[in-house]
Image (cartoon, rainbow, N blue to C red; front, side, top):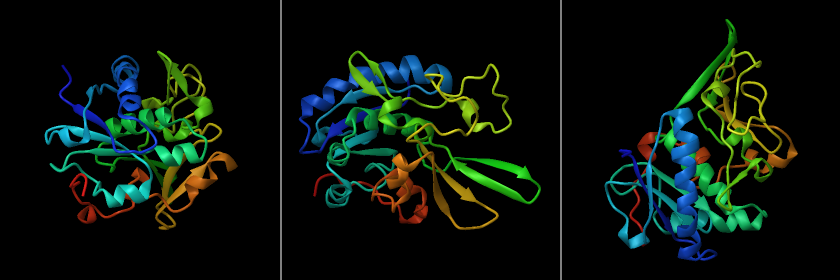
Length: 242
């Protein structure tokens, strides 16, 4: 039995509780059968009503948009200072994106880097180097790169080899679907957070093409990108609905 327990709940107005609960079995299959064998990280998922969230579980909360994330008091951690992931369903629908792909995306990234503090350092020369955010779905995050599990569309994700700059391309699988051909490669619509340590300009978004250009804008409040750039002493625990 996995020791990580993640409770999924719905606080959006654009989705019914049953809509969110219905995708949990597919998410569980992705985590246990697809993600865990590659990453060695498994979790037990369950859907609960928002007023039944447990203090000893990680949370994945479906919200309308980033403004709601602030109004509801869902900040950076659960009420017991455990990892919390947020999905903005109304924003997805506004941009014509599949909210189930975003839920899958945030779930896998919560598992791979729960404290949003892991990076990979690529140093091509003695005087230059870049930090890459340890985000396992960003490089292949576009809906066109997603796949189905029992009728639910979920996100593709990179494998550990993607974060190894010197890894030879021949015979290496870099993402679950096998579409990425080189380490640190971005598929169309993909992006990744990069910190150029030689320039000291902070976290910037490197995008594959114009499709991902909106991710180069200011991060949405409560998103992983916003939290990565926020000092840890400014993180706040969730208080639930206010």
